[in-house]
Image 1 (tube, protein in one colour):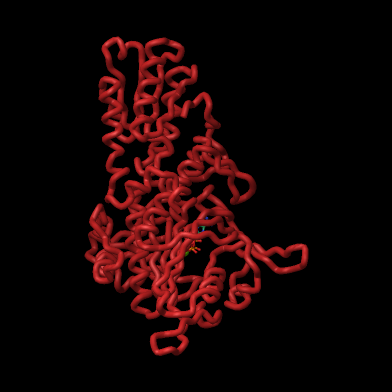
Image 2 (cartoon, helix red, strand yellow; image 1 turned 120 degrees about the vertical axis):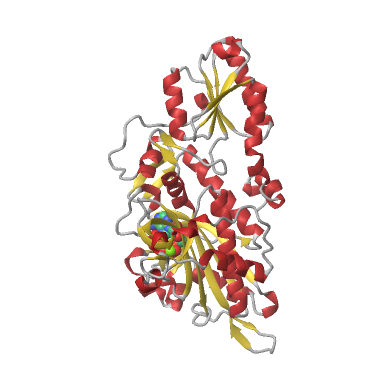
Length: 464
Ligand code: ATP
Ligand code: MG
């Protein structure tokens, strides 16, 4: 993309309404614009990152064997009356009625709708196990929407639902979700720690929340500091292997890590004192096993092996896709702006032409642009006539991890400058070497396990 043809409405001033750094930077970098309280338009740069996160979530869910689909935002109140949640959900549910006076609601989550789909089409245990998921906008009429996309009223969520014959199978689905979520967050450059949590209005006993540690987080958390040393990395996972998924789950949940709702001071006291931590965290996902809580009242049964009908065991599993943008920025920024992890960056590399209109720098910048594109990368070329200081400030603000600077003086010596946004370090290289270096940096993100390489290069529409 050439910046002169793009829509990147960056703000010079700090917006007064933004209380936390991620909200401030998303507004300043021209990623979002508030439409009304807790509801945002996604401007091109923000939309690009949102799509990147969505793609990673899809890839990791499909890899775990879960099946993508799409359910609507507006739902009929009748289904929620069946489960008993129409009254239980309270003020957070946005209720409306259509022209025929039918009660509708904007879905805050989808357990009822998916259970209805299941009971209409699945009748035998032979069709199990089944895990369906979608990524769709949700609406919760939060009493205090704040912090930009972190606590919106309209927000984008991945929610998945497993249907299993036995508790054992459903717990395997739980473990599968836990492992696939760990992988998802790591690919986004984030550490999200699974913590024992409270199940709230969804119900059930088995639940973990995934928390990104950040001072601005809304949750209070308590953990054993060694839990932050564990990484999934690129180990091979066989999602059909119950024992392997169980072992990973145990590895990641054995150490003390809990939110304040489940915190137990007596148990925490047994953690060696120098490893006891209390901090704040951002909840970026949650997984639940809730047994037959919805299948029983809603009649989601299958014919078991003995011919008798049995209610299915279910769980639901959510990732806050839009909230993740804020969480990543909270975890990765400096005083000049955002620093995108390579896995999610909206453009792979910035190109700054220090003397736009100069034949030599224009030609070299164009060549670099073409070579990066040919390598399968998406560069953002600042081809405007703004002065160098302004160009650097914009690139730093929008946080592209790599920048190639093309200036007349360097070109005389046959070099351009490659700069890391994170470390600030620069090296002088020939244009060809600079392109090769950047392509090499991104290679693992296109590889990272042979399974997703072919998918990563396509847009998610082509393989869904
Ligand atoms: P919270 O405790 O933050 O209100 P929740 O526990 O009610 O969230 P879940 O039902 O577990 O939310 O939803 C799954 C994920 O969706 C959460 O882990 C979070 O990342 C995201 N999410 C929930 N509410 C919001 C919101 N108002 N704005 C943005 N993301 C949200
Ligand atoms: Mg939650």
